[in-house]
Image 1 (cartoon, one colour):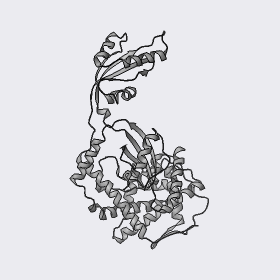
Image 2 (tube, rainbow, N blue to C red):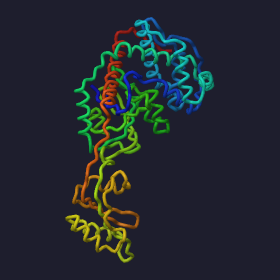
Image 3 (cartoon, rainbow, N blue to C red):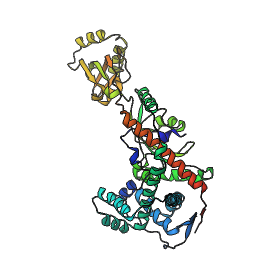
Image 4 (cartoon, rainbow, N blue to C red):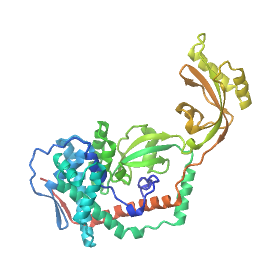
Length: 434
């Protein structure tokens, strides 16, 4: 099992509102993307794929490419269309399978439901549904293709709710085990992660998926919004939230991702990473050294060395380091403070680490009571900080209902992906080229 898929950040999500990666985020992002130029070739109706008794036309493929390119802010050229076409084709084939399964189960999506869903999307962008569809058409995006996406998404949502909800059972023991795991993670370095996940279900597709992953990396590094690319292309559980996985710690991701996580860097994008399940792109938006650091309190004393024109800065740093080496207790630190000519030296009292500036946070984060920091350069000042007492704060853990809802969401996501994989394996699919 790919643990990355089961590491969704804890939010108050209800299984009743489960939504697989949906088009809503991508559609909203089209509003801020540049107008997509239509391909130079004409809209020639032809069969691009046969999916059981249905077909995907080349017009469908071209229209959906326009949506993908616009939503992700990618350059609209022949290279982009060529690289994206396999992924777009796969999405269109999957939509046919979803609609066919809904029909088999006698599940219907009405025109009114589609209009309502489009209206919700339009409202988020201060428009009515007609204005929204007119805007899409003005950008060269066929309204029919957008409606087809929404229809398939609504149908699959109903299928999942009808067939899979009852298969998800979360016991009290499951909740207790998850809570214990969260408690054990207190004090570990955490990373605020965004992910784009591209599955590889057939080894023969590995090279093509890897090429797409690299193309997306290049586009993001050239300025394409990560959230838009994730919403349109990622098959991960956080896709509908722009790829957001929330705060992640060691052991929550697949081993291949865990190993690279500390090396990516703040506000940096990873290269494509291969796991057992597929290819991943990770972006680190924030790092915190300990999940409970902001809630911890420390009793601090500081000794400040003010500028002295007769002493070189490097010499002053060395003197401060020597002083630190000779401080073996808070009483010794207080004695030096009492002798210090600087009015800034003194007892800082009990403070929350979360209230300290980043330099002090970094300095005291790992200090145990009775330990003094290395010299800190604060502009022209040099300071030593000593922790005399420390009380670890507790991690803000979610309540049992939230844990249960999120475990349900994770399991339901796994089940629906297996369901779709089985439909794909049992289907007759014949893809063609122009």
